Length: 83
Image 1 (tube, helix red, strand yellow):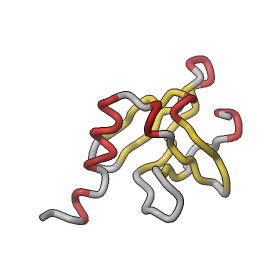
Image 2 (cartoon, rainbow, N blue to C red; image 1 turned 90 degrees about the vertical axis):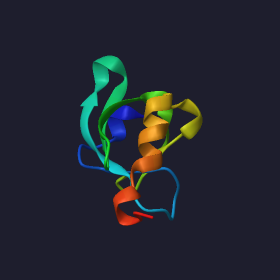
Image 3 (tube, rainbow, N blue to C red; image 1 turned 180 degrees about the vertical axis):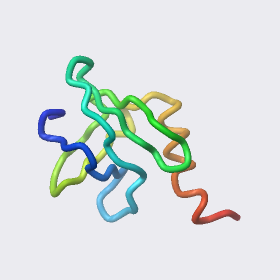
Image 4 (cartoon, helix red, strand yellow; image 1 turned 135 degrees about the horizontal axis):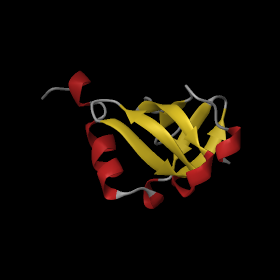
């Protein structure tokens, strides 16, 4: 599935929600992606952490992501909702 992902693709946790970041680089040798998550920085996402790829979007599978990535996702939109 990694091979069908393009650099710059937006990353989402669910259809219909705001994006949380974008793909910075493909890491085929690691079967992973380097993803920028808003307000948190760059994270390596294993291919099994990708649920689907369509329409230039990467949908993540939260059940297969490391804890630090889940924490970063939780803070991704924080600057838009400060309270």
